[in-house]
Length: 161
Image (cartoon, rainbow, N blue to C red; front, top):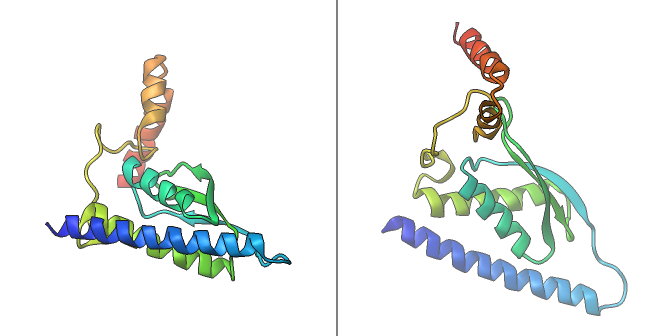
């Protein structure tokens, strides 16, 4: 029941952000002079599952004045990232703080009360040794190449020692 409450709360919050962003974009469009201060930032995600990452990217893109330009695939050493263009950026730190607030609210809606600290739902197929979603190793297995899997398994065994 609590997760439903957080999801409803997130939907209302994102609706408010869409309306506020629309007003700001319209006001800038129809007023003389340029009052934009665009910025592109790299935002390292705490979201881990594909559903969480897509929901975050969609939430950013649906909000007027922001746009996801690209993604960076996460590895075990580095989290996945989104590259975000913000039209009205007072500073890069403020853009990152706003994105962090959005992700906090989204993860609370998806994972429940714990939000980002809660453990996400397990992925199908489990965690891969080298890549978070396992696509690269599955592809190498499909073509009969086992060198990638052997190298990843050797690195994992060495790290365990």
